[in-house]
Length: 400
Image (cartoon, rainbow, N blue to C red):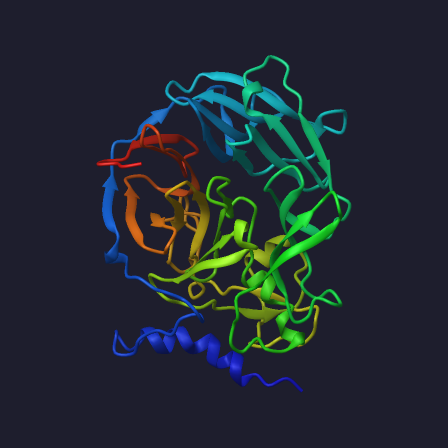
């Protein structure tokens, strides 16, 4: 019989800690350092230049290369997934990666990864379980085709970030596979040439979720996405943000995925979640309106995050040579949806050094989500507003 006391303590821990108005210091994840939001120099950026993007796009990813905005989007003018625009004028320069089932066509593309050192743009079609590589030098070619297509052997892996032509950062879809206990992986490095896994990295520890029965639920609690994790090929650092707790981790690929730092802050809260019956639809999973309970009753139970209590945390890291950017919220999921404002609205963009030092905090004069790109040479942040427009903000007093 499962004991619910440890998990109940975990669930109510944030309320106990924050109800004391600072009299009780919040506990931290093991081996963590922490910081206060005041430790970062704050810049409120205003008057961003709206980039005129035409034809109209419904954008779900932004990347920057040289003087180009690389946008993953749905266009009103064609059936392509990837679109190249001039970053200064917004002029459309090229579109490629057509939707379809034919040669060099794809079922769906999401995030893009730029490997500047290798001269590559990498993206993943998770529906077809293939990775697609384009040469950065070919982005403006009239007819652009992939330089390489990677066909993964198994469908049980997700989050394929490209390290090089052989190694990929992956994570298992299920954390209940026989033989994985007690590792319960966050991710590992997959060698596609040898079909082997190396440098496994475990999920963060969470007090109260301590049985095999419950531990299989760590994956949704610490859920991640290829769009949020970032790898810098010059330093070898991999930055891992967590969306349901204000936790960041940095790993060193060149040192067999050794953890460089674990940062818990600035609000130092733990995931707040409940269990529920399997949803009848995706909408129910996102907005659960049903009875929930504090401990799992069966392996069919799913994790839900109660509105108004569970909090958004970190999203979408961008790793550069000297440090990394990451989006942060810290606010609870809204109890009710309001027109024009959604739970995707975020507040802060942090810049950290790799030792965990918070350097800068940026806020903006528009409502925005997690989508952004940074031109580190010209000191410009490109930000996607909730209105679907891209705005360019100059970074003041910037040092590379």
